Image (cartoon, rainbow, N blue to C red; front, side, top):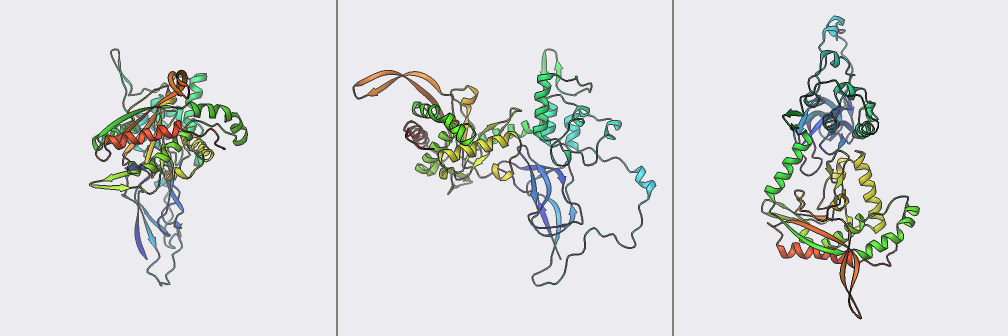
Length: 436
């Protein structure tokens, strides 16, 4: 026999810790390699974590509700001995013959399970009577608790909310649907006293939730790590607008979903990254890592105002239809909190569509360890000079501003500017005869 440590895995760039939601196996259980043994939540996604080895789950080192740093041990697994050993795994969870029966009196006096510290932090003090109402293995993920706190949903109200997750656990989709229903239909006002927000005169003090604190820290880290510079280019998207308007209903009937502008943007970025591979890089100390694959992250706005960035791997290998279906699927599952950790990792470049909020341009912050990010603004009609064989004329064109932020440590202004101009060229040169 040998004992190995199972550690908290890394589940995406800049994610440095995870919260243990629940253990799917208990100490003494036989487990197979790659079999799911626990659920973990980060500020972006809830996911099941597989066993790293086959054997017996000898010891659980991190309890439900505990926040654990990436790389720290969370369990011990007892594996089969060295190669060629004929040792067999002992039968799991078999009580010894001399084990005494539990003392009923001791069971009655056993203290109630501790409420996970994060739950107490979010929902405030909970009385003994309320604690007694907590069902066995009842647990709320940090995402759910953050939303509950933001929406002033107290413990009693949250405890009465039915869940669609594993073992009836309340998912992010459940609580967001409940919040939307409250705002539409109204709901009884909570009687629980909340410590925040606090009113001081006419001002209101709102405590940051855990997710907002982490986002804040990552934004500061990115600004401190990368020397941000932003270049702007205005692109004429008239051809793409006309093409999409012409085929969008046919596309919906054929594919059963909408054709947005995002796949056109992703396709142009992927082509430009192949032309300028020194944009598709990352930095580690004094080394530049040139990426082989083009993996484009798409920033998706969630109902609670936060952003999540699922990744399209090898985006340059998709057709326009393939990109559309992939983007729609990722965006839908992102909003339903159904993405897995692998779909948030490995991005080499990021696209943020700020035009969906009516913004014309912006200065996006780079997603570490990438070195560049592109924000696309809203598409607006503008009068513009149009060159024709018979001379210049004024016409109405569909224009959009592209904002390209890049790390000036490794990308000079010429390269950063040429890249975003190349993206604009691909958009302006779209082939109206494209078949999808």
